[in-house]
Length: 467
Image 1: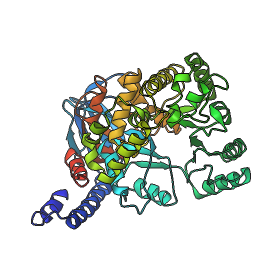
Image 2 (image 1 turned 90 degrees about the vertical axis):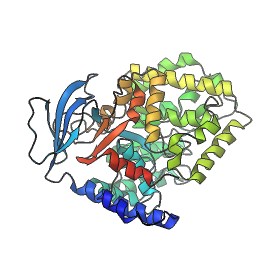
Image 3 (image 1 turned 120 degrees about the vertical axis):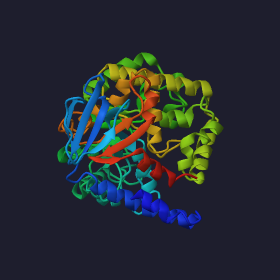
Image 4 (image 1 turned 180 degrees about the vertical axis):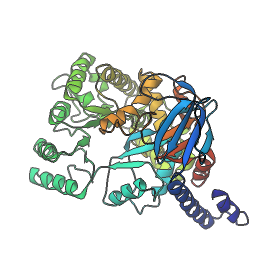
């Protein structure tokens, strides 16, 4: 169908209006293909190398058969028969692994012009699940449309609107807001800064009563230890950890000390890391480090002008990239900013990541895209590289976005690994990411809930958003 769309526009000039029309028609065409391709049919990945993510291994020369959105067969290529109606995908010298989860993403509203862009960029990069960290009412219908194949996009797990110092005015207001979001059907609650401890405590108690997770930031008045004790599901951005490493009464700036503690890292006492890591593990709280967000925003080692020219920036509006440039420039020019202190903040965060992992405190993959220089989907691959740079192996980094995400959602029996019976959310790579994590970028195709998108389909999607 995409070839028909291309021919339709061969004789037309690509003015802005025509380009917008082309985008709309192609997205409709791909959505139709996505919604119908797997209905009653099978897809067979033949002679493919499987990275199941149940262990650090590669199963070579396999045939993987998907029928009705589920993995039905994983067998030796020489002895596995193909269904008569199977669509065959050549897996020779390629690697099949579970689709990735973006565990801290931001999805535009259901009517936003940028919605299809964000969802398409996620899909093009092998992201098959997104935990939307700033929900709104339109996301409830969007979640359903994606799940039923009426819209192309990764499956959506959505919070409600943020609970923060402006949206919550009292413990009673906090209780009412939690109850309303639970009744509306949101998957979890998003915590932002500004909440008082009594308000946070009321949110936590109500959430526990209703069986609704709450996750996100650690408000200044709460602090990391009380957040852990209250049962926060995830701490995102390693928020609250840097202040917890300060000597008592030794924070002259007050609060978080800049962007997640970047201004106060020179005061941090690293001997306190083991204790807060142990408390995190004991509490069973997961972390979404979003290390790409932190380093992209604060590191002087990442040249600002070079970042503007990163290849993926062509898929974002020029105005957005300019805003990101200005935001980082403002932080670097802040009177409290010091490049050496920022570099120490990175080293401390890397140590937190590796020690949390070693202690068994779960880590989840997330980039906080689209935020400062984090292009949806593309940023997930940068996040994987930052996790490996911090000290995780490529396999351990991939776990954070596959089996760990499934375990966190309590759905390990449904997705997160390449095993029979699982939902077929898969990504096919042209090289082995266990040998070099940057190979996660080499996406040959993506399967969403059993619907196959080839490299040609992905290229057609990306083309629509090139500047």
